[in-house]
Length: 492
Image 1: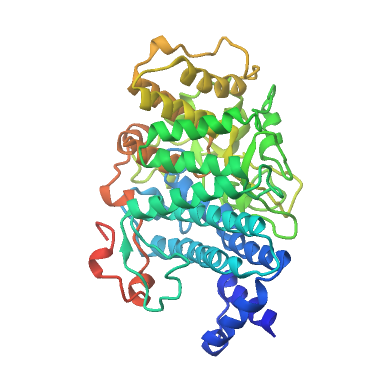
Image 2: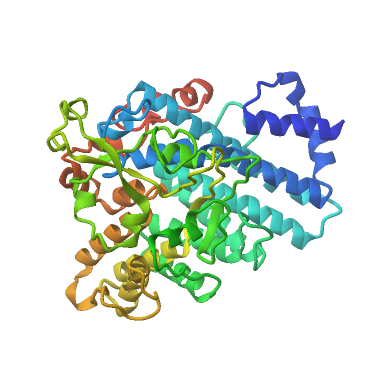
């Protein structure tokens, strides 16, 4: 009986199944606490409920929305449900409603993490060290989830294991308070998680350090960020994959890929396929055995593409020339487009030409990310272009051109040619090439303060201030009694 209640609770939280309130009264909740968190297997099942809502959204809609905010993703309009994200003028009602799915799913994951953090200590048959490991995993995932939310929305209702039963809701917290919770969670995680992840897609001590480095980075704490990133590098657990031809990148991004470059990915299998390929492939495509959604199309004269060195194997791997030309229907009212007759390009980063169901893992952190984060953070913190920072950037660049990442190459940049500002521009450019369709570019541009200039110069599109944050969903104001109308983000 106790397990039935837990299963129904998890289903309600992770699948948005409508549950009768009588099922979730306080007495059954007490039975769940007493009866489910007694064995390792039961706690691990509860941990699994944290991941499910995130996997359900982040490899599809999340990537679709974030990449629509980029100079390569805000290209041709006409993709249903995504034009609102491409305009850079703030979100319309349709776009806002679609964002609510992220908000809901992520708070379900946070709720499930809070349950583990609160109840795992009650398990009488689990050793304290194992309990702390489980709590560390739950805190890592709670921090990971809040990190996505705070970058998209800013200040948030901050639910923890201490106030999760507060049925009237909680007030909006400052983003600084959200970040502080994440830092506290990750400090606990890096101490209590295992040295090696128990399974692919699970966190370890060093993976907690990677996320903590990013959390520091987004707060502008560059010295702390560089130190944590350096700890990941010095762990020697990861290295860049060797690439000599463009298709070698499939070792990192292909179906079932398990790369030495992988730090933390959201994992999928054929029984729970991801939507990543659907959201990044064209409607008519030779790179997937069925139809994609056709969200992203650009043209060969677009600045990001035409200015990109053709020798860069990433360009060859990520994009292909389609059989289509720009037509007048795309040109109407869009000054950034050339005359009709220019060849269209489309992405193929996640490709499976013969597959009709594709389970692509979503890269969250790769070793290239740690290297570039370290490069920027160490230069910002020291206020000078260091040889070490430039070397980390050059490692990623060498690989992109097919060279050994550990050996100086003809494509290396020289530290003496750059000052701090121009080096940061260089890192952001490199990150733009490296992480296309991994959901990083928009947040990179916003946190660096370069988003308006980049979008204006690249696609002649003005970014309004209100577009820098997303509107908090209307349901939060309807259901959370602690929320006031003034808690809405500016401009909405």
